[in-house]
Image (cartoon, rainbow, N blue to C red; front, side):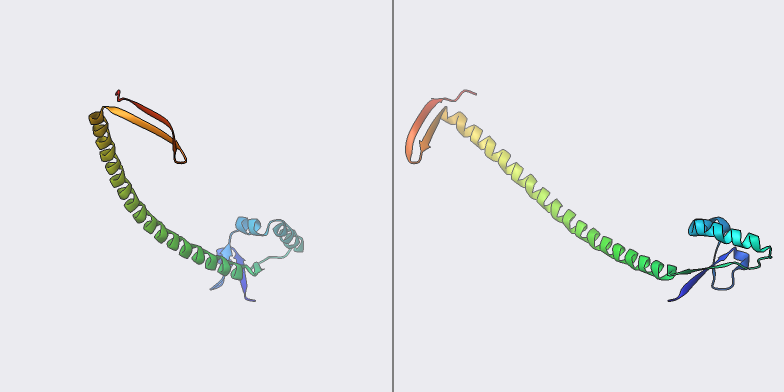
Length: 140
């Protein structure tokens, strides 16, 4: 399992090391950093270099990057689908406009026919038996 080293302060970092400032290190390590600081202060020794070796962070970052790549690829596929859906929606909307125009023409034609007839017939049937009939003048 590869290890990733975080060096405290850029001036202490060797080539290839990652470095962090003390505040960031404290945030990363939380309570553990306080214990390290206390131990270092109690030694009364000059500390020239401080390395914190964090196990597993590299693999976790790699997994996160892989997942990010997968999510971005999924987002690309969804965007492509959305583009196709939008194109289809545009076609459906155009068809709906044509159907509405046809409906308007048919309603206009029906209005014209009703005016010409001058009356309305209404027949109600139960099964095949006529049960109600109404004929009256068309009042509009």
